[in-house]
Length: 533
Image (cartoon, rainbow, N blue to C red; front, side):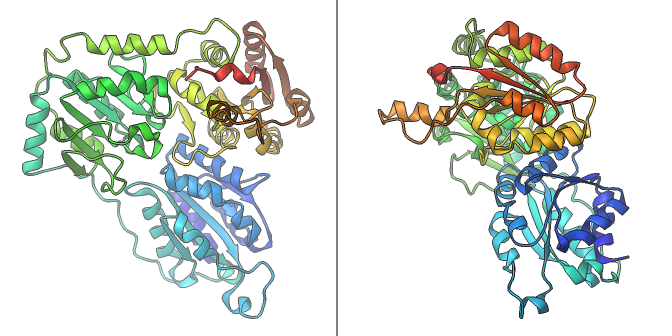
């Protein structure tokens, strides 16, 4: 086997079935090896979008995403999505071609130190060696998936990819789930058993570890309401009586939730990572007066908050060890939970007028209950993340740690590739869609039926809103109105321009019966976000 074959075979064994990128001469052996191993290579129009498509497949399969880039500009085009994977805890194997080291000493075209570029934005970077190819790819997969997941980079010299692999490596087994023990365990159990106003805050670690059953058990055993980060939405079904939905970026939601958090006597944070949260979530509780039990995959080095007890371990195993033997009674006796749910409903009422809120509400009402949604960064994401009800984990995906634009379309394409029969909808602002417009060609080439909803206001609406809030003049946020319907049709899809709820309903019905992708351009007023979130 060639060294590239060893890498491809191990990736296939790890469950990987797709790889995404833009090839160059330096990665031809990698592509050949991936295809021979049973991993389909998807040609994208930009490496950044390729990485998000790879992430989209991860969310549906659990296997690491694979991004492939050629030497130099191809590799550097992926920097954005690789750092996004780092901050959003996405396991990703990044394979880049590179010039052979001896050649690099006497040749300069497109030559740069790629591992040095990627080292700060990955969990680890390797240079493939034919004699150690088994070990390198096994290490890469372990590092990418264990603890808090993230990207791992492997630089593949041209001659090494083709070189015969030697040795078999020493492959390791994943570590077993770890639960707390000792005095901290007893102290936490006693606090939870005696809680009168328990509260649960759940984050991305719990989703990554598949701790949804444990979260449900904790909520119902403790009678504790649950707040999630945006990426953890749906880990407790949001139609559950104890769900308070997601939080992170909305001042209107924080105005309701922060005083409620202050009332809790015991707070159980399950896999909560504050990388998703706005500054208002700095020190949201007081561990001097509240018992705060923080279960995380890694130690607290962020200092966004502090806790009474810090437990580093598996979320589900820790919850099982901490919960009391019998369900609690007489918790939140003053009807506080119902009052908070009512206040949140008032803050985000059912919209009656045309605008972004009605677009979101209509899409949720018309599309199937098991629809997968993706959201780009921008004003619409904040509103959608509060309004879109998620009743299962990963029902809504977005870039919430790095908050990069241009992610929704390729995330949706990646999800649709894995589940072609499922309804997948992406929500983008018009600026975000313009960043990745070429990937509509990818959707057409793959025969996907994805629905792409675009909020059209010819403005960077969130930035324009911030300018007005600071009483600044309108500068650098407006751009020309774009005919997204014509563009959709030019790329081989269907397009609809909608300016009312009825038109949107008709477009969504048509999209679900279409044989190709659909772009729905929802034209709204740029000031319709004022006071919305």
